[in-house]
Length: 271
Ligand code: SF4
Image (cartoon, rainbow, N blue to C red):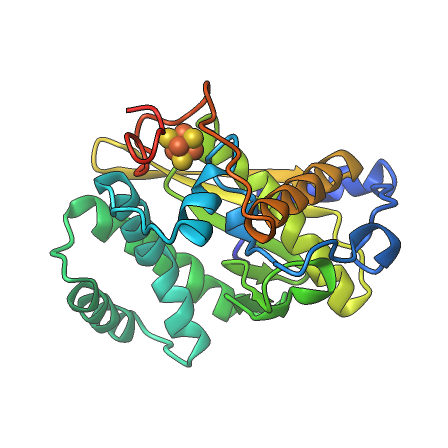
């Protein structure tokens, strides 16, 4: 079981209050069909930039954001957590195999894992092996799901799919600008899964892997994917698609730009 028992219990308790009523489902093409030819990725829609100027700078102006230290740190935590799941998915079934995989991953990423990353990997390894032993709920790792029917990129890939529950992993905290966007991302995955399978997806889960001293502190949050969240996602999807397709500069966001945005100081963005 990948999700901790208390997370399942919470999802069950929500279910016992009656099904989540959402009208905007992925199969309701009258709501979700693409409105523009440009189809953004889920992460573009759920970007940290309040005005979506990052999409304009990248796709209209052709600028690539410099990799910030913070972004690199986020990628490392994400990769060290998820890699054991990928290996178990490909047949690894022992701690030895996963340990060898950790060294290969560090070489591939060109880093020497510190104690914190080692512990993040161990956390992922324990959960991945546990899910293999339990085998009760199907688990897929970064499954490709068609995104075009709901106006998204050709394929979208949630980090994990536990049954039909999308799970996202992030090094951000739940209250930061980026961490809170993960809920929006889950709505995008839910719509794509619904369009693909015809099965309602009422919940998603975000795992916030934050750090205390050198120990990872995973925080599991269940997100109810209701109509309000779905509407927000579709509104942002259309905004990004309009900006790129019509080459519209939305201008700097004014307030709410994260201090670590790699575009700070670029082409009129706040420095
Ligand atoms: S500096 Fe602000 S407006 Fe510019 S891309 Fe970053 S978040 Fe967006």
